[in-house]
Length: 471
Image 1 (tube, rainbow, N blue to C red):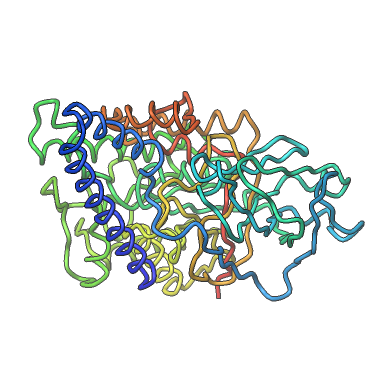
Image 2 (cartoon, rainbow, N blue to C red; image 1 turned 30 degrees about the vertical axis):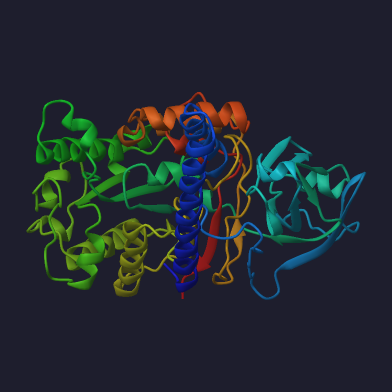
């Protein structure tokens, strides 16, 4: 985590402690000067207000501008927003610029401090993209798939609970269809491939999925079966190993093109720090990756001794690159996605690319399934578009690719997520109650396809990738 984000997190915690202190003092005064029943009533009402409006984990100011840089020479067109829609100069936007991002100032109304500000888009297909409560700054609205309506002057935008600036900049990117090329997807855990790229691998004729870890930790749900911690972790690892091979079949990827490497969750950073040292599971006690490799159709270097070391991981990935010879590698964004396993999965891939003597992919597609500072992104309900995530500190200046998923593909993606055991864990009573409160008081909605938050966040009109060429 960057120094700025650490500072924002500290500020957030200080504010929370200050608010709690003020609340306690107010309750003490209320207990002295008001009837006894007013104290428990105030506690209940305060808790309801917190769950409805203050429970989001937002570790930056909604008044901060997003700070994106794009490659020098990429298309940036001035646009104006008026009562008749979004206007760009006639002929200025070529037909083959398919990924479109509108840079625009968005300012929440008074109501937008309590309800989610929304940008409503009426074009080729209706869309809605939500932003932070109290937003007041530069944001990036995803208009990919709306190019035809924009060129014809039929694209209309309006704000609900927010005001939109009348002038903006349209950033446009031209990409080949990467899903028509040979694609290697690096999934740190089972479900990462589906969350990030189901829409792409399900239409790719030569997609491979390589899952790095068994996903065995945090298995408390399985302890309810009467298992101890180690046995529950082993069961969860077996189930998620199965998921990594079986779930892609729903998207048309045969089992022989799915590879499970069997390393252990949250151990990749330690492996990277001590490359020859084996790092077994924290929870199951296992330390042999071969126990998870029974479904693999390929023999890999790590099969020799099954040691969970960084050297074996990089050797496995190098052998896979040489065997698959992918044109495109899809992996986690190392600067944007903060999950330790995601960061080190991409680090291992880059090291393997550097070591591979027989093959170098042309392109990296980078995805973010997690964020440092906003656990609701993409904000808003399922099936909406994906606006760019918060970027308070500039990222490398990469172009973007944001293909559109039709309604049928979104349903298939939701069902692919439903196959994942890790996304089937029932909500706790507290989270279920919070959702009922937010539905009633804040107007938020969750999809019927599944309870896990990823059914809302990942099943969207777009998928989003940063494009980085391999040197």
